Image (cartoon, rainbow, N blue to C red; front, side):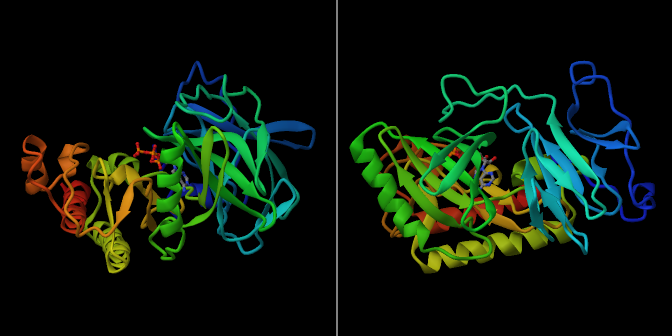
Amino acid sequence: MRVTCPSRGSDEFKHPIRLLPTQPSCSQTSNICAKLVTEREGRKEAIVLSLTRPATIGRNPELCVRSPNGGVIVSCQDLSRNGVSLNGQRIKKASFIMMDSDILTLPNSLAFTCIHIWSESKEKLTIFDPTPPIRPTHKCIGGYVVTSQCLGSGSFATVHLALDPSRHRQVACKSIRAKREQEVGQVMKEVQILMSLKHPNINEIYDTEENKNFIHIFLQLCTGGDLFTYITSATNHRLCEAEAKYIMYQLLQGLIYLHDKMISHRGKERILLYPENILLHAPGPYPRILIADFGLARPNAYQETFNVCGTVSYLPPEAILALDNKQLGYTGMPSDCWSAGVILYIMLW
Ligand SMILES: Nc1ncnc2c1ncn2[C@@H]1O[C@H](COP(=O)(O)OP(=O)(O)OP(=O)(O)O)[C@@H](O)[C@H]1O
């Protein structure tokens, strides 16, 4: 769920530091997911983060919390002139994810410890099996540090927050459990094609690692959640025309880029272009969007395919007909355009 930030003119912004009182516990007010605790003049104070209540520290940074899989994801956006520091690492004009126990320090040296309160993660596949750890932990994979902070999971993969120490940045690590060697080869072939893609509206693949059990894909981190959650948490579950136009423009730019390279977002087995697979680069209104989840995107999209099933609401008529008649194929690119049209409808209806 996206948490709307208070408007610039609201009281929240009139005070350089506004700390909200600590609430008793998450179980009593199930909405409260995290808090940022600090000590001032010997007194503990806390900023409470709930799914319905955003928080700010003075003008910056803006904090919000999401819970896509029942776990806690705290996004923080720095818009200040001086920047902030996360665990001693300086960050300026960027958005990032705060894990449990992370320390956020403001330029005035006030330090806040992030505490996740509600964290019943419902991960499906995880590299932290058998049980997701209660305290944050990490694993080193290739040159990356993959943390136990889950960012989301789908039918094929679980995505964790990871750190790229060489470039001092947070990234997303998508781990796919590989069943057969043949499957690994197929996925890696597709990933190689997708690694060459560079566009502001395409979720960039930085790197890959594979081992006996998993394929790990290191992706550009998106801290704002997905478009579906963004739409459903807007007033009346719809966006204003201007915002829908802005998002649609970016979506089409991304699709034009992909189609020019003869890559369709339509998966081998399912339509993949739907609002859950469109991610927001950072939280907040008028977001920059990135088309994500290329697990099954296929090159040479004009080639007709006969494999049809999946997210029916986004299917074009010819694909619906093909559901019953496997002899009828349909092509990926027109299908992507149809799905984009359905997304526009969903943003506005
Ligand atoms: N680059 C990213 N940055 C932040 N979060 C991400 C990123 N990529 C994926 N996620 C989160 O992880 C979730 C699952 O990822 P993804 O949809 O790629 O998995 P999947 O198993 O391929 O999904 P599907 O069931 O749609 O095939 C997403 O819904 C999103 O919340």
